[in-house]
Image 1 (tube, rainbow, N blue to C red):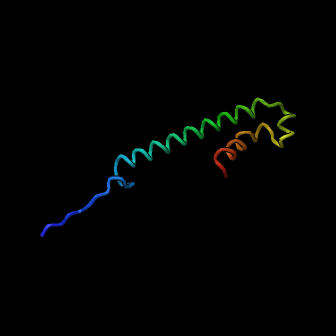
Image 2: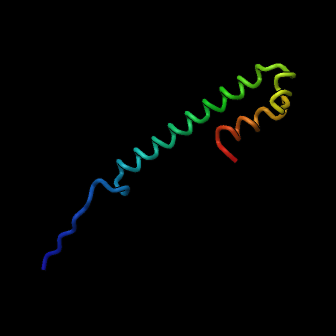
Image 3: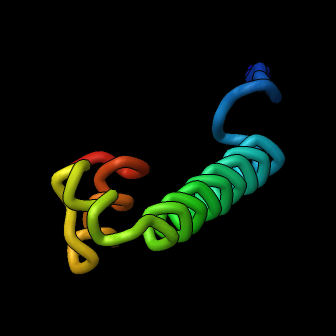
Length: 72
């Protein structure tokens, strides 16, 4: 008796799909990090009084940028 197994090559289990998903995740992480750095740079360029108007201090710039980009 012979058995035939049908394989769907468009599923998430193919090597190419996993490579594509990996590359997409790396690109998303890269873009998010660029937005984070831009946010830090822009906030760092503000004066102390401008930061105070926003309710921020120089010490909270990185945490604020991280929350803005990544959540949490």
